[in-house]
Length: 334
Image (cartoon, rainbow, N blue to C red; front, side, top):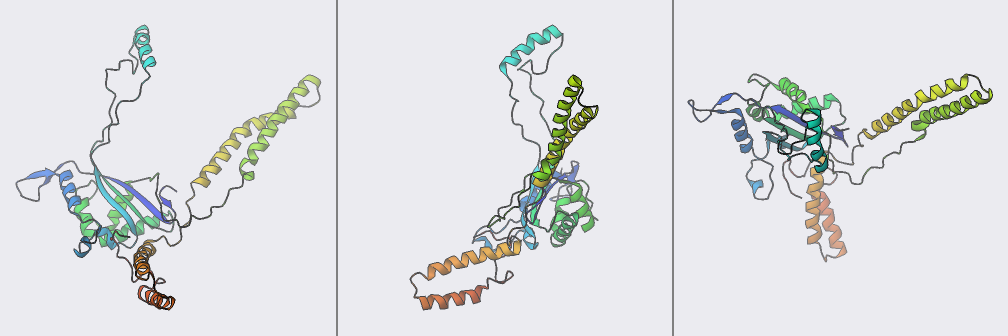
C-alpha cells in the first residue's frame, strides 16, 4: 500500500550527489562542486504555469510533457535537521551522577553539560518524488512510467544526473530506470485527495480472524481445568494436559494470525477513484471553470434562452470527451 494507493503510484527516490570537484561551466580554469552545479540546474528549470500571466510565456515544466504525472518535485537535501537535545528527566539525571560514582563509571546522560550526538549525512542527496497514474503496484508499472518520463525529459535528466553518483554520460533509458529503482525508498504516507465520493470499503468478518485464537483459548482453559480436576479426583487422563499444552502453544499463534490478517487487510490499497487519472482531472478542472462562467453569464435568463445556451455550452466544451477541449497539463488554475 505505501507506494501504491487509489490508482496512483507514489515514488520517492534519494540519489546520492557526487562529492568530487566539477568543471565550472563558466570557464575552463574554474572549478566548482557538483552540488553547486546541481542547484543551479534545478533553479533554472521552469515550474508549472501558476498564473494567467505565465501561461503566455510558452515555457512550462518539463514534467508537463508526461501524460501520467500529477505532481513531481526535485530538491537537494544537504543534511538532516537537528531537532535539539533529547528530553531528560531532571530527577533521573540527578540520580545518575552519584550512582555512576558508586559504579566507578560514567552513566550516559549523567552530565547535562555534555552535548548529545548529532546525526549527519555522509553527502548530499537529490530527492525525486512523483505521483503518477498506475494500475497496480507491480514493478512493470514503475518501469513503464520511468521509460516514458525519460523519453520526454531526456535532456533535462542528463543535465541533472550527471552530478549524481551512479550515472555516466553514455547511459540511457535502461540505466535511468535501474538508477531510480535502486535508489527508491518506500513511501510511508501517500496522499490522495481525488475521492469524490469516497468509495464504500468492504468490511472484514472477524470470525475467520479470531477463530484460531478462540479454539486455542478454549483448549487451554478446558485442558487446565480438566487436568486440575484429574489431579484431585482422578476423573480425567493425560489428554487434558495435552489439550492444555496445545492451547498454550495455539494462543500466541492465534494472536499472531489475527494480527497478520488485520495488518495485511489494512495494507491493501484503496480502490481506484472515479475518474482520478490525469486526463480526467484536467478535463474536470476545465469544465469547472467554464461552467462557473456560464452560470454567471446566464443569471436571470429566460428558460428557453437558458436551455439553448446550455446546449451550445455542451456542444462547445464536450463534457463526454476527456481529451479535448481540456486544461493543458502543467497549468495550475481552477
